[in-house]
Image (cartoon, rainbow, N blue to C red; front, side, top):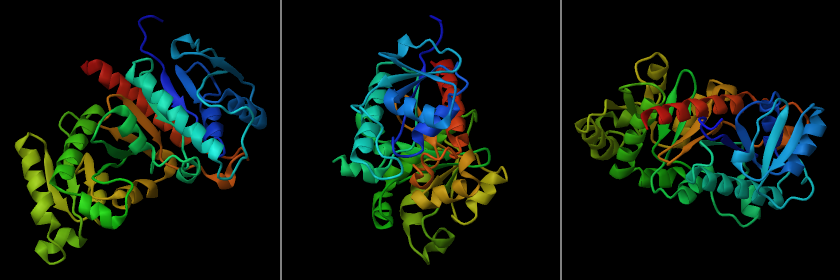
Length: 331
């Protein structure tokens, strides 16, 4: 045991959504080197609701985990004393979700956990608790102590990195400057290497229809994006483009590219999610620790009914182990 890496942290997500349910389902067999950051009260309640033959144990620190079969070990990071309402916006659940993330980040920075896997949170619930973060990524960057991060959405067919994340389309155009392009291309390159591509082929999507059509539909491609690609190539990165956004993902799926850099949130996420939420994983690049998450939300409409699909969270756990192993190998 002493020679093993620290366990992974798995944050419970919004307690009013499907997070606790999919966490319980993923860990139902037990034996995984995973510690849940959240509420043992909520986890005990969902285990009872699902009728699972699982023991929920409360522990004080990640290194206290024994990882026995049919056992879920939880570090209490919340003040929840009774399960919050299921299937609706709750400030209590929003605060608890935020507290679990912050605690997991602190543990990752102290190397008490080898990485973080996060269950879904609800932005409205956090806002109702007075927490003004638009999503996981911004919390991770702020508390992780880094200025530049990028979202990589990955499945077996496509891997895409976003230049801009949770912002309006108007602001995304403004924020996609040369520095943002360079950061995304570099992180796409590093992320591709972490996933096993020795020299990732990075395709950069254009912002405008037909990648600007030589300036007819906008000049961002010639003025900003192409110079960034040229600069990245000068650094030894195999980056090409800009390519029209309506065909580059098809080409990536056919095997021409390993990673696609998308200019804004929906441009990059729609192709990945169209192939199936159960296959998609969100990876945060640029952090000093590994972080993955499922590619779906809190699903309040089905919360508490026992029908939530845990496949994407299970895939996120697999990717986290893979990235931790690659990181350990290179260190």
